[in-house]
Length: 116
Image 1 (cartoon, rainbow, N blue to C red):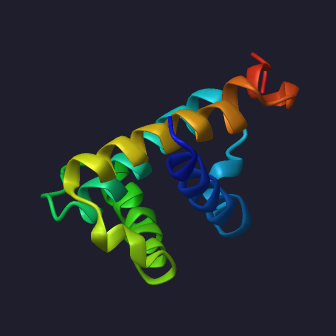
Image 2 (cartoon, rainbow, N blue to C red):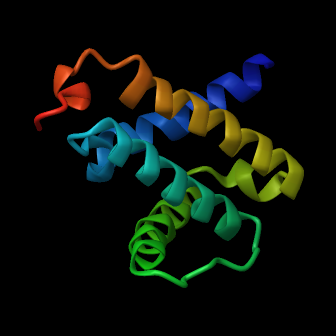
């Protein structure tokens, strides 16, 4: 991964960490599911692709994805210069980083408490 990609991921992660409450779900499986749902739909929106709204969960993730995609478009004009494959690669790397920060690398023991 080149430095430009890392810098862009840092900007996108920073926005999520400062503005998106959904990242703080209390169980690891919820965080994993939400990260996947929201970031997949955000990617689809950024790439002008159709978004599946077939379930209530899909609709919930879509609402957060619309907010995130709109914020990204308004704050990071360089997204408009990227082609779809580059956006997908960027968002895939962002997803990996977010999962690490909020799930696998988190020191929050509540995430893995079986009785919670």
